[in-house]
Amino acid sequence: MKKLTFLLLSVLCFDAFAQQPNQAKIEELTEKSWQHGLSILTDLVSMPNDAFYPEQIEVNIAWCENQFDQRGFSTERLKTAGIPLLLVEKKQPGATKTALFYFHVDGQAVDRSKWFQPDPYIPVLKTQNTKGEWEIIPMEKLKGEYNPDWRIYARSSSDDKGPIAMFLTGWDALAEVGISPNYHVKVILDFEEEQGSPLLPKAVIDYKDKLVADLMLIMDGPRHTSNEPTLSYGARGISEITLTTYGPKLPQHSGHYGNYAPNPGFLLAQLLASMKDSEGRVTIPGYYDGINLSESEKAILTAVPDNEPAIKARLGLGRTDQVGKSYQESIQYPSLNIKGMRSGWVGPEARTIVPDIALAELDIRLVPESDPNRLFALIEKHIQGQGFTVLDHDPSDEERMNYPKIVKMTKLISYQAFRTSMDSDAGAWLRKVMNRAYGKDPVQIRISGGSIPISPFVDALGIPAVTIPTVNADNNQHSPNENLRLGNYKDGIYAIISVLTESLN
Image 1: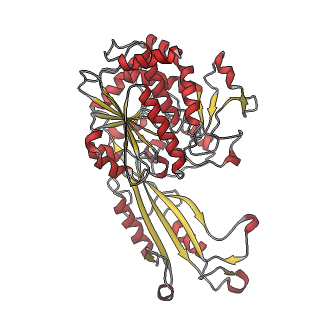
Image 2 (image 1 turned 90 degrees about the horizontal axis):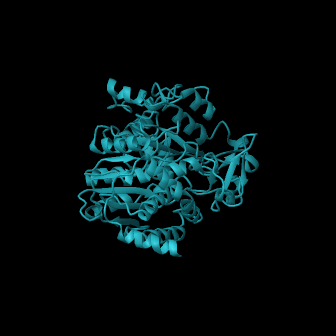
Image 3 (image 1 turned 180 degrees about the vertical axis):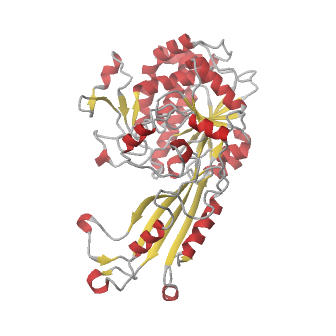
């Protein structure tokens, strides 16, 4: 209780920006605080956080409000048509600049049967045995031992609750020694990121005046596979298409109607196959228009220390798509991905039928040069060129009789891509942070392959945005057995302290 009282008093009273600590001091603060941080992390990941269930998210919102309130931040729920955003703010006397941090608090859904632990929301500590298997060890071992390769397994441990706990831990470590940033701090907490942040773009416009800042720092995503300190200057956006093809009005006996009733599964397969060549490149004319990498941009991509044979070995790939000449080059282009297909039944439920429909859900990862509406139009034109009539609804009986090949096409744009210049003031400032903290330049990623809803902030606020990833690349995010490497957690606290103590003028 005494320690908590001291911490709260420190947080409320520390307003002067002390001299920037050197590497040794930051290491000392990290060493003293990381176990305190683990208690924050385990508390946070113990709360289910699937945004499909708003009641789960309400518990997470209340937890965040309480934690930031304790540390002297103001908190405000930014109302939307559904789940709110949470804006957190700490003003610093005499500060002239503002940094806006972004975290998301929701997580992917869980299939408990695929997790190798009793409950995905009860964190466990694991070590890798001689067989390469991850086995549970007592969490109490951390009181007297530390192994950077041990891992905390729990849903959202890496994506994205780990970074939130790192931030709170770093803040507490500085508060205890009376150090604070020389800039105002705002934090925006998104509780629907894994659902595509559908309400965020409008909210950013509605609350633009409250969100004003000089730069945005995104605490999400994994480090480069080398696990070296990393900065990412952009992220692809995301849009979606659902395609449905039609066979008989109801599933029919494949003996009676096979060879007669067209199978929608084959129609869909043929249509999808027409969109890419054997090397994985989209064949739709104009799909990659506008992307012309200069020699200097190619040099930036080449400078990323990717081990491509190791990447292919980890993924079990004997070949790769040839959209780009390397992994980094490949993610500079918009993608076209089939994320799931369905027609009829399989396995124990399989039946010998001609199905009534076939359905495919596609996602398109966007880059700044690719307008999703333009890509939608190109795809629709291609589908029509394959002899299909494109509808936005299930066909009526009359439409079925008039159009021999029908596709229902529905579209959704979640958010656009963003990319900040590496030569921006924000980039230079963060490289200065990393050089002070690590004594070397970070790995610099021009644009990351994954998607985060940052473009609404960049567009509405007119500010640069850069991602400071901290978690291990092999964290199984979005999959069963998500984990956070202990060494990355500790180093993430170190990185946060370094950012919070770099002068921003």
